[in-house]
Image 1 (tube, rainbow, N blue to C red):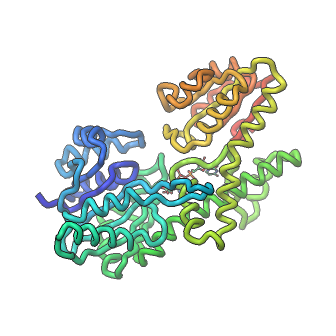
Image 2: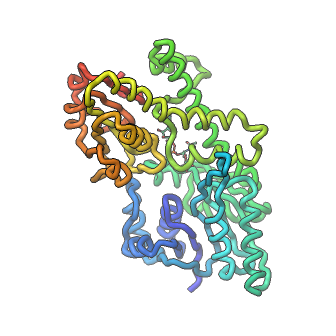
Image 3: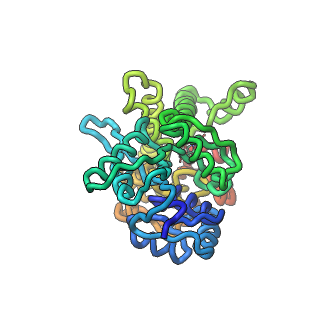
Length: 412
Ligand code: SAJ
């Protein structure tokens, strides 16, 4: 059977994208290297949490328009939505790891036909769409298959974890073609579900636009984080300061916190730095400021713990941001682990969005999973790491006579 769309990678982006195309009547085949993920999806289930996504996936599978498997199938359009992490080089430099994109491009090579549209959705360094085309072409040659003319485009996603379904439909998008025709055809495809405006551009600009958006945010959060350090030194409430400064009509400072987590903002700026290191000192420094923030919080906890005998330390929140359950690349996890590892005290870890203590913390020995209420009651030091909504229920009277390190300005 020939599909309309074949989506490679059924993670945070690939699965919603595959599902939404399927619910709009296209025949979609989803591919993932993990057989357990394929099985869950074919049963109409979901292997991670995102509000309302379960309903969409179930509808897509039940309609018969979405099937998943571990290998690609022929289709008119192929969409690559695989991870693009970085690896760390010998001098600590961050090097984009494009191995998943290469694997996916080579994997679809035997299945493409002339005129197919091949889209890279993964956030990628400038030039990756061209590499994708080259890997695909090379793989066909290696296999003795005839060369085929395909259309190639980069169409980055912009959805915010926690609000994905709305943003997937409503956000404006960029369709960056290696040729103008590729951009135009990609635009037509996304118009199937996207109510936002779709701008056609070239692939390199589209790649850079995505990196720029997340770097913009990273640099601005770094500004807020640097202000928080300055204010601590000068004994000023940074949240009060930012609130006042933001009353200027052209000032919009973001919020300081315990660091920047997630798989996007803390990663993508490094792709720019890697491509043009000599001319990206600001973007690099912002990354360094944000990456240093967790260590600064741990130093504050250490100083407080040193004044107490056998302190109990409550770490409130483990996710990388408010009201989600995603613990990966989370500064809150990093801080909690560092506190436990440094044996600063007995640690009570609180995360209302997960059921058990993550294994990486459990193995440290001195960390116990607790409810917010128990942790706050028992602790001598309370470290607020994530501004989760359920924490508003904490009785503020319980904070009295305790050391409170509020990294988000939650209780000010
Ligand atoms: N953070 C702060 N202060 C702030 C805002 C955020 O410390 O004022 C922290 C958060 O706590 C979190 C991190 O930054 O640790 C990132 O959170 P986020 O909500 O800003 O962004 P993500 O990583 O969930 O999603 C981002 C979004 N990009 C932009 O807003 C420019 C999203 O639209 C992208 O689609 C996504 O990256 C992605 O996939 O690239």
